[in-house]
Amino acid sequence: MDIHHLKVFVSVFKNRSFSRASEQLNLTQPTISDHIKALEENFGCRLFDRLGRTIMPTREAELLYNHAVDIIEKAENLKEVMGKFKNEITGEIIVGASTIPGTYLIPPVIAEFQKKYPSITFSIIISDSGGIIEKILKHEIIIGLTGSRLGNNRLDYIPFMEDELTVISLPSISIPSSIRLESLKEFPMVIREEGSGTRREMEKILDSRGISPDDLRIAGVFGSTDAVKQAVKAGMGIAILSKFAVRDELKYKIFKEVKLSDMHMKRKFYIVTHKKRALPAAYSAFLSHIKKSSNPVKAP
Image (cartoon, rainbow, N blue to C red; front, side, top):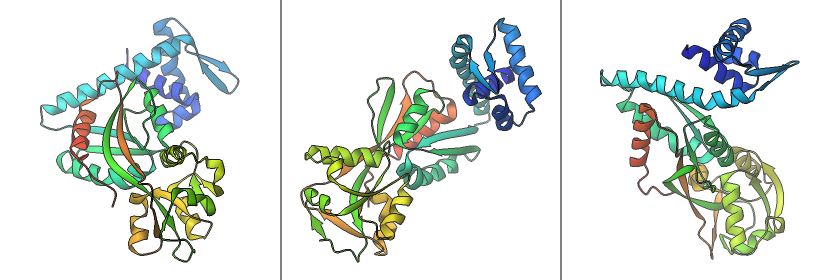
């Protein structure tokens, strides 16, 4: 069985489209169709039902998918194992990360890793914590960094770094430098979208004091940390964000920090992997490196 057939199949399966697979793999659509046809003839079954312009995987395709992913990974791992004979680990590492670790924490860790393994390339996928965890469960990515630990016994969560959430506002806003958590209800707020690790931790902290998100004066909900920061700069209200995300703005007094007199809002970031998924050599080396980087590093 040609490994290229399986790579084409996996792309078509993930994209649910021959044309998108064609674009992803830089192959013509007839070539894509030939690869799928060869697999169907080899297994004696149909892998996709063609429904007009859309396609649906058959039950046989669902069964083949997980095996195909495993075979492809083992084949790529074999290349890396052979590379070890030359004392070199090669390949691409795809890391899924929620906004804060993906933007502020992982780049220096990667830069340090590449000093030892210069042949490794990286691709970082930024999504909310829930989206990253879903991709790991679906075997779309191998390793993730998230700001939330969602209950699932199929995943391993390894503590990475400690973060602190803080209340920020414009210096011009009339708000005391220290307030109680309850007092947040008095000010307009801008917050992250549902699914965000920052949003989830904020709601968990509020709930611990019997405060519902509905009790807050929500001025806007935004899909990224940068969007929340821009909304605060525009004067829409205060926000609760990671200290990692606002350290430059605090340093140069673009924002002022509002302390909570009755609460420390801390959380951990986690390295997430699937318990049943074997790590290729490059990923194994990177996981070992990132664990060493996860010594107690706290938000500034």
